[in-house]
Image (tube, rainbow, N blue to C red; front, top):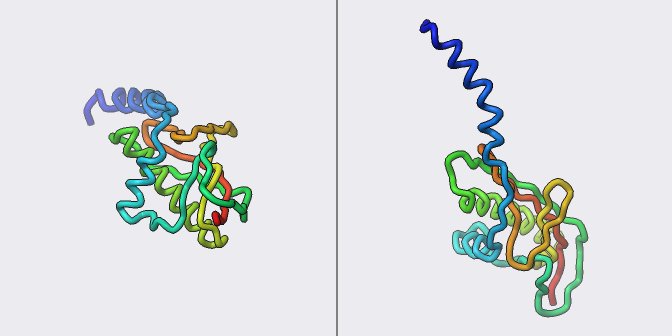
Length: 147
């Protein structure tokens, strides 16, 4: 065993908490781009439409579930903010699509991002928290039938 090994191990243990928090930030990214990519790749089937708070679907809206939520995380290590956040958003949208179908809805409306109990409302962007190891997207919305 090398004499420097214990010192190096201690240094790494002390540095790891700082490294894990070093990249903790919140970013706002284009919602429509992630939805389009998920639809084109087949992750979303197009039977359920998604509307951020501040945008309204055409037609009459009947809410069938007033409190749909999802929170998805993904590995962010060595990946771009855009790639990891879009992946987490797509996973969240798949969950909302499944919930909408189960409720007989064809739309998810009034979508807002939620971090630490605070709502982020934007008609074009969603909010994602990016850390050294993980990125996450939390959403709440209403499931609705649009006629």
